[in-house]
Length: 56
Image (cartoon, rainbow, N blue to C red):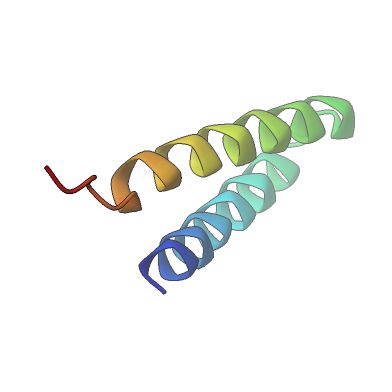
């Protein structure tokens, strides 16, 4: 559940940054590259932060 909330928040952040780049007239190709990079970082950090600790 917390992983889903983390990803939803991160997706909202990515959409906001992509819209800002669009309004600044950044080329759509670079917006797509940035979105893909941020999605990868979001998934990797979401898994790392919400991973359950292994019992001893």
